Length: 222
Image (cartoon, rainbow, N blue to C red; front, top):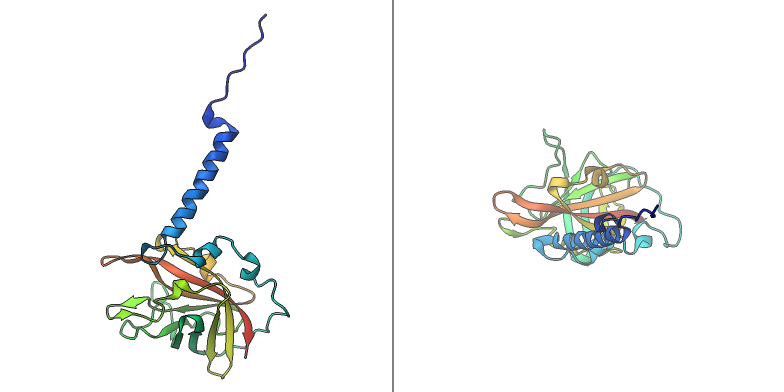
């Protein structure tokens, strides 16, 4: 009896095909991330770091000395990002009836809003600061937020006279239709900060398609 000939496995079921498909998928995803930057331009160094570069600095490892002790609760007064030339007053924000976080008044584009239901500057937990990228009158306080680089500092002044200093871990651009609420707004044991503004493409009918989110953690108090 002649030996049975083994049928050749179809190309789409081979290991080589799976590896090729995975490589192509990675290329497509990386391209999409870079196309989601502000105004449709590449997101730049912030997006690259968000994809995993410089992970030691992003999670706070490699810094000398222990982390600073969290501060007690105290209302924020100012927000400064020296590398971007931002030095803005802060107002408190609440959730609207639909449980969405409000924004500063559009007729006061240089204000930063701080979510009063979250952590205050330097306090344990997740603090949320938001501001406009632009308004009908022109550029607003966070017009250049997407360009802040990992390792740069964000200083939040408090009503008690102290300042909480956060270090930027990463910058990411999220599409509003799939915004990761848990990742951005979720609780944290250590003092962390999220700074949020609009990003992506703009339409007069629907507004901006995305949000720029800066992730930072407390590295000093003074």
